[in-house]
Length: 337
Image 1 (cartoon, rainbow, N blue to C red):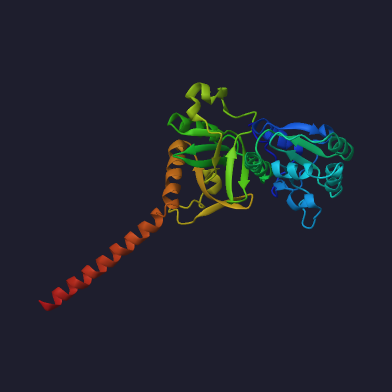
Image 2 (spheres, rainbow, N blue to C red):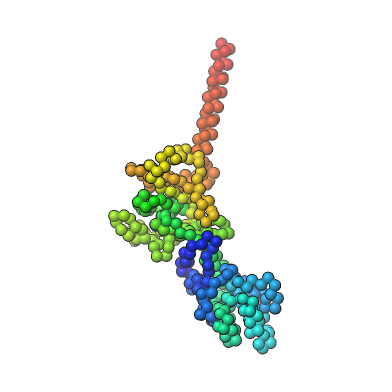
């Protein structure tokens, strides 16, 4: 399967038949049987639909904007119709704005259906896959294509299994920090420009590199480096869930704003999803590789339900309570003497 196009849209991407073919044509063994000139047609509802009752002439609640699947059952019903009935039913479907059809199980459209599709701007695709297998693959591809997407200037890495996006002004050392993390056994996802995809069903964000820059990094003073050739294929991830955003800021810009205890939890909203955000002050001599690694490990602890700042506060309160109790006990003992 080819890499899915990285389109930008908060409400979801505009999906065409051409996109569908590019992303999953090889995987689903799709061929164009009719309507090659119309493959730029938009699939208004990127999901598959079994024709079902529509073949009997019942069109109430007919999902015309979806990819219409014609499998063994649909083909057998159409073949049972009197001569000319198959073309007449196809004409009624097209007249009700159904424009994208996929015939599974190796079935082929009739000459009349092909001619009508060409005339009306409909597209008919065929596949040797069973309806069940095609529907499973097509649902995955269409969901990926239609997912809300955006691009963010930042470097995405996997640290201790956690997906971390490092963002900040140019020249603050994002790529150099990522390179240091790679040398410690972590992995790069994307450098400089990160493509973000939202899984609508789970409300989770997933990050990847653009198809043209995957595996490459730009390091000032060195130039373009190819990470898999230098550090091996295990140093690169294709896609990773985004679980933490680390923002590099110059120390002199945020002096006085730094949270020294970590009790204030910050978030960064991306495509409507709140992601934990940590701001790391950048100044001469600070080991950013260590700090990013520690921030990722800290976030894993917090996600598991352990908050160090809260635990320290509880510990101090217990100690204070124990000290007061000891003082009261000491006073009572002194008074009885």
